[in-house]
Image (cartoon, rainbow, N blue to C red; front, side):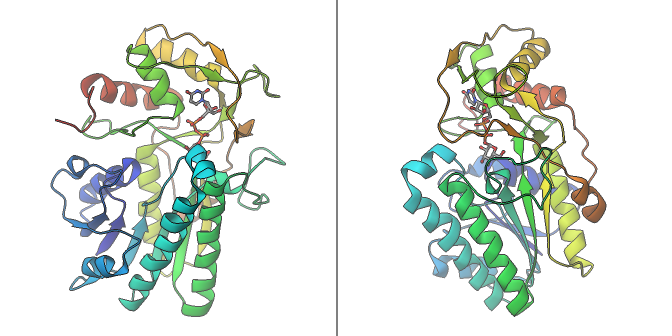
Length: 326
Ligand code: UFG
């Protein structure tokens, strides 16, 4: 059975649906601080907090868990600069607690949601997994610290892991049941869509970067494709595969202005691109080489193009103005 930590969050909930489709047995662990119970659509939940090891034990008790998928973390770069203590506690101490309880329960396989933020400023593009890791913010530092923790757990205890470094997660469940519901919403595609729908302001953070139109370049990856990569990682570990670190992106970068133009094309709505100063901590360009995930995990992204990511996210925001709130 699989344990999905953070299964009520944006990426975790898409994973839960994917596991259901694959006929896997699983249980979700979430404290519902930022996740949404409605996103679970009735899936089995143990409400527990990573910072409280006792509550974690309840999730493992009397269940034959062989793999942990760990999505539960704080994710906002800006917040990590303001509140690093909360990030070290939740992302690092919390993951340590989860690993220890998993180890106590005899779990030997772990899939970890890492991030492109572990790389910091690119020294080459696209970035492969051997690119230097010099995070530029506490969020990236916490994710890198966990990656190192996992390496040492493999060496010492034989706990094998796949560390998946997501680039920019985007899109929503094509069937419209799940989508992004962050509060506040800081990510580019949702913000541009909310502006198109007249529900939020949107400005371009900086147009003086060394890129083709001066705005930042990012590599967007569909949330369902991220879920698929986790299934590949589970298969890899269950068949005895060694610990791995893999990037997940589509290898194609889009500028902020190109994303705005794509949203205008897909939705037929006007957004505009008013320019504001740079946002601290942003890298000019983050584009992945994901060859390793394709070779080692058999990853085949179903929605590598930007348009379906925007279409699916647009359908979600249009039909669910209050997100998961009823
Ligand atoms: N942007 C704007 N205006 C906005 C929001 C974003 O111009 O209102 C710009 C940002 O400055 C950035 C780009 O759009 O240049 C993408 O920003 P996001 O906030 O959507 O995503 P980030 O690239 O900053 O970060 C995301 C995740 C991180 C992860 C990183 C890895 O939030 O957790 O991708 O690439 F680490």
